[in-house]
Amino acid sequence: MAELRPELFAADVLAAARAVAEPVADLGAVAELAGRARRVLFLGMGSSRYAALDAATRLRAHGVEANAEMASTGTPQPPAADTLVVAISASGGSGETVAAMRRHLGTSMVVGVTSRPQSPIAAEADACLVIAADGPSGVACASYRSAVALLQELCGLFGPGPAAGCRERAAEAARRVLDGRHEWLPRTVELLEGGTVHILAPAERIGAAEQSALMLREVPRVSAYACETGDWSHVDVYLTKRPGYRALVLPGSRHEAEVMEWAARRSFPVVVAGGSLPGSALDIELPGARDVDVRPLVETLVTELVAAELWARAPITP
Image (cartoon, rainbow, N blue to C red; front, side, top):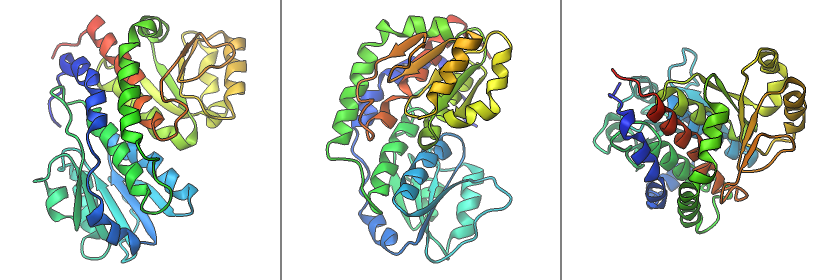
């Protein structure tokens, strides 16, 4: 595991708009492979798998058999000539992902996604797509965002992809989120600091919730967990019985009303990132939140900024 430098994380987050604006890798080498594929299998760990979760959902919504598999699984999907494997690793050397990819070499069609073109993922795959490298902090925020954008484009090989100009709109939205952070960040930190943060999102964007929770665990070392909004009433509502529960909602689920009913009954604060809900403690306006292609590229900025601020308030020394 690479050494992280959380003191540099804030600068990496503030460079998000520049990372979003970088052009998507050329998909020409992958298009022919995609044309022969009946199913798509994403492989990855951590942020790489989180980016793949929402891409797999997008493909399934268009009738494509797709799955995002944890590369460390002991019961993997078997190789097949009609399977397109997308092995994602920002470093290109994640041991679990490299091993999982190698099971498919010579049988499945394998595409590597990495920020390091000389890595095993890039060198051994049938084709390689390059994503942005993470900044000096070493925290996987730029690579995650770049992977999300790239996978959106890759999904376009199987069905409707992102609308034209998505990258430009996302870069502008990111700039506006960053420029306007002083209007909502202090209050957000006030509401979320001091305990575990629970992040809720619709099933189709659960990867964004997982990544958001990871940013809080990885930088300020705060307990944070993701939960699908509809499933929340079945698995997480019990935690609201104890004082100190706090939630950040990535809106868009039709099941949010039940969450807010419990918030009123149990008196816990809810912060909404990119929308508004009746009874919330704070609604954060996110430029681009209504654009289904742009939102995945900007909504994790909220917890990235919160994570940077929490670390600055209570830095953890080695």
